[in-house]
Image 1 (tube, helix red, strand yellow):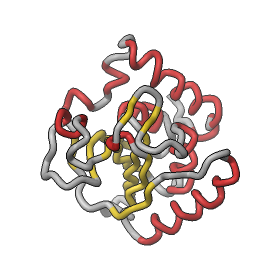
Image 2 (cartoon, helix red, strand yellow; image 1 turned 135 degrees about the vertical axis):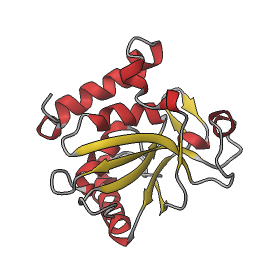
Image 3 (cartoon, helix red, strand yellow; image 1 turned 90 degrees about the vertical axis):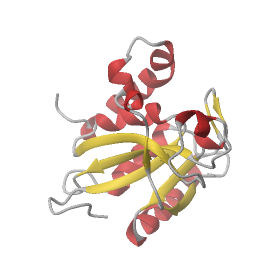
Image 4 (tube, one colour; image 1 turned 45 degrees about the vertical axis):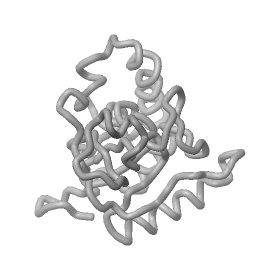
Length: 182
């Protein structure tokens, strides 16, 4: 999906805690912005506390704005699937609940088809079935400002060191050819 006249596109992805996706995606060449938020639920403009209760139906997501001339949607999905376990339902590491589910919220039919093709291609790489939901994006709600750039603002916080830092290393090592020059 092209977002505006400058050719930028947007991907919306859920794979556990949004902080664990935000920082690694910010490493990639062609990514101009990553915003943490919520979608896929039934409550209008939910708070973080409401989403964490597991009663709103929302997933923690990131919206990744990117230049498709630099990084493709398919390449973003490959990174996404490498950053989390798409075979665990409603859980990523220590985070448990439907708000931590694996999901691709597609913006158009091309994104839907690409997501389905990537899941089909990767299915044999896992011992268990991929449970990632692929559903249309309806409404995205941006999380509060203190959730944005969380890793950059809190690199020494225990959760950041234990959960996010290994994902950062994985992106830098596994996808070194996609990491932006500093």
